[in-house]
Length: 118
Image (cartoon, rainbow, N blue to C red):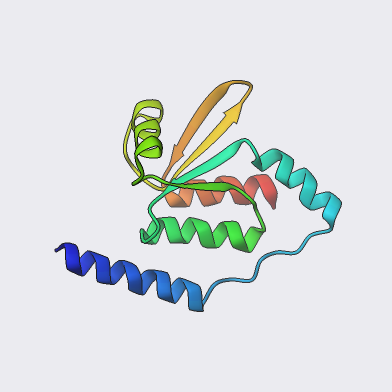
């Protein structure tokens, strides 16, 4: 089972590389404003997860510079579990005035980002 998942993951990553969407180009001042808003956001993900790929493609399509962290690595995995409450990816962490909001489900994350940055 591990081998099948590993092979499928590599196929997903390869196809994502080949068919990556174009990054949205904005004027520098507008991009800087968006970067200031997104600096308080973090995506927890697995590299080969198809739902995480879906979110990363949306980030690229919208030209958003949000930090992505691999939830398989220990400090990030522990943070996701203890602070977020569950080990589920993709997960968007939004920090606002010292308070963190955790958003799960790829469609919900993409919908939130589309609404906020469209």
